[in-house]
Image 1 (tube, rainbow, N blue to C red):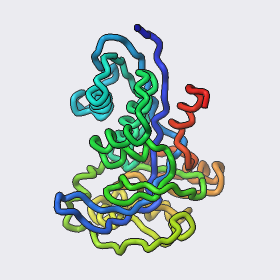
Image 2: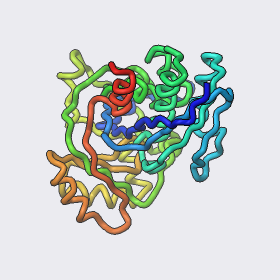
Image 3: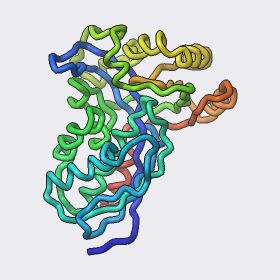
Image 4: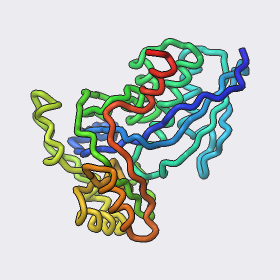
Length: 290
């Protein structure tokens, strides 16, 4: 079986509508409560299946060794788990910034798992793929499942939610933030009380929540503090994940683009719509005719 055609799959970004750190486990992992929503913007992963039994990554990511690349690791994990003897060429069109808190690497890994499960005809369930994903990173399962969710635990216990699908201006200050640096910082608050929710979708008041990482990041990264202070003058704005990206919320694309045109020099940005179903899942449904 040789395929030379590449099939392309979206690898969307996510934003954390809020992020509470409610504790820390003995193994160092943090207990979280967060709400994930996808945005209709992201990388694109293209895969061509072959019978070589090997995985070849055709796009190098600057500063990342292939063996450390989550895309490569995801494909390898899937092969080992299923003993599949097919191979694949994988290339990626990377538009999401690294160290931005948009989940780009996790999304890439999830897209590879979902895409290869389909292309290699492995027939693993979504949950099986999510379990493999969790070994690669705490955010991978959310992208595999592909629905907006309230997440607990280390981010793997997911409850579907339907937050409003606003337009967002996503802006990135001129700095990159390592997730590890945030989670190991002594300045990080780790004891936000857990939300007491009976009906998660109805009781979840995102407005009254916050991002625990934001306070710590603002203290250590003046670029983030400055941009957030600027954006908050125009719209409700918050840092996503461990940063450095900030999302500002608007009711229309035009309003978001208007503020984008006023952004200070040197700020990377894009406008995208919040979506509660991942573009990856939509693409898969189209392919499978479901």
